Each structure stands twice: as C-alpha cells, then as structure tokens.
Length: 161
Image (tube, rainbow, N blue to C red; front, side, top):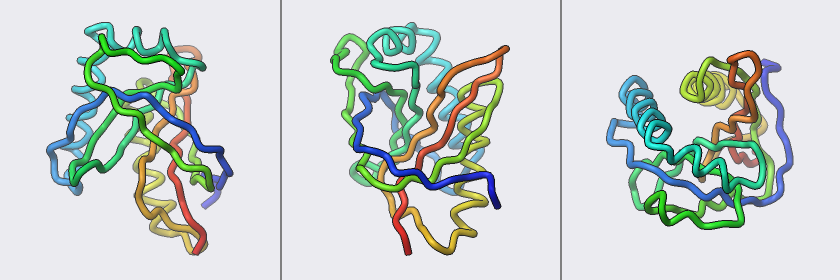
C-alpha cells in the first residue's frame, strides 16, 4: 500500500476549540455525525472564520485527542494568539517525531476527515509492520481548496517497531 508516507515533523502546538464525542469509539457513523454537527455549528456561528483570522498559516486542523478518558474533537490552528471570545480552548501539543501522513481530498473538511481517517486507521495502520500508532493527538489538516475541493493530509504520530 503506497498511499502514505512517514515524515519527520518538529513539535508544534495547535490552539483548539472542541467538543466531547459521546459515541462509542467503534460507532463510526455516530462519530462522523457528531463531527459533522460540530463543524456545521462552529462554521455557522462565525467561530471558524475568527479562528482562521488569527492563524499563522492557512492550515485548519481537525484534532482527535483522548483527554481524561474522554474522546475530544477540536477545530484548531497554529497561532501565537489567544481567542477567549471563541470559548474554552486547549493548547494541543504534537510531539517531535515521525508521523504517518496520508494525502487526500473531499468536498468538505468532514468528507476529507472521514476519508483520511478510514484509510489511515482502517487500512494503513492495521497492515503496518514497521511502525505503530501508540496514542496521542492526531489531526486531519485542511491545507487549502481548489475548484470547490478541499485537500489535505492526516498526521498521526507513530513509533518504529
């Protein structure tokens, strides 16, 4: 399977605004609906535009992270600023190291997220012999749009076996 690569990344921090996902972690339809509802609400109330306005680059992060035994989902950006007017935020630390990177595109951040998550967690990681995901935050990164299509990558920290 050659639809992925391993890439060394420096440590980085994402400022995220999120929600707790209540669906069982094996309920992909439930997770996907919760994520879609979150993005819809976050976009419609102007918070996504406000978040983009303080970003240091054009990347929009959709972050999955287990925090205090809860599955959390965040919209975030890399920024030097704070944004208390957007609600309760979290600084999400991504470690320096190797990352599984899968590229893709979709008609929305949700479609991109679902596609990349499915490929990474449903195909690449189960078949990987030389590396493994051992937890920590992972993110779908919307890198831009072209002709109505959203393109980006999923970044998952991995360790060599």
